[in-house]
Amino acid sequence: MFELAGHLVLLLVLAAFLAGFVDSIAGGGGLITLPALLLVGVDPVQALATNKLQGSFGSGTAALAYARAGQVRPREQLVMALIAGLAGGLGSALAYLIPPQIFRAAMPILLIAVAGFFALRPGLTDQDRARRLSPGLFAVTLVPAVALYDGLFGPGTGSFFMLGFVLLAGQGLLKATAHTKLLNFASNLGSVLVFASSGAVLWAVALAMSVGQVAGAALGARLAMRVGARVIRPLLIVSSTAMALRLIWQSWG
Image (cartoon, helix red, strand yellow):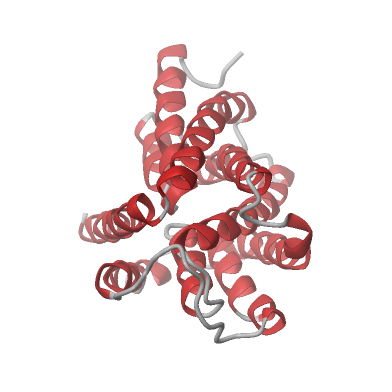
C-alpha cells in the first residue's frame, strides 16, 4: 500500500504533525519533514515533491482556519494566490535545471537577517502599521519572487512572506501570519502540479503525512490566534535561525 515500510510512514506522520504545528505559526515546517523524508531513504527529488504535496495540506488547513476566524479574506488574496501558484510551478520546473547549491550560500545569511529583524525590531505586535508598498506592487514584486524561490528551493518561504507582510504591507504579526498561509499554499500547489506530471510524488506516503499536517496546522493556528505575537515572534526567530543553521551544516557536510 505504502511506498515505504509501515513504521517509517508512522514516523513521517509524526514529523508532519510537528511540522504542521510549527509552520502554521511561523513557517519552517519543511525544516522538519524534508530531512525526515531523506533520512528514511527517499530519493532527493521524490522527497522534495512528496514534501510539497503533504505540506500543501498543512498550509491549506492553516489558511482555512485563519479565514474562518476572520483574520484574512481569501477573496482579497485571490490574485496574489494565482501569482504565487504560477511562480511556484515555474520555480519547480526550473529546479531541474538550476542546482540548489546556488541558493545554499545566500540563504543562511538571509534567514539570520530575518531572525535578527524580528528579534531586534521594537514594537512588533499584532497591531497594523503604515503600508510601504501598494497591494498591486506587492503582488507583482515580492509575491512572485518568494514563490519562485519556494518552487526552486523552499526553506524559509514562510519567513520571507512574513517579513514582506510586516515590513512592506504594514501588517501586525498575527495578520501577517494569516496572509502568508494562502500564498504558501498556492506556491506549494503550483509546485505539486509540476512534480506530479513528472511522477516524482510518493502519493501514499504524502497522503498519510497530510493527516499529521492537517492536525498539527489546525492546532498551531488555534494557538496563534489565541496568543498572537507572544508565540509568533519567538517561534519565527527560532524557526529562521534553525533553518539557517541546518543549511550551513549541509554546506559544510
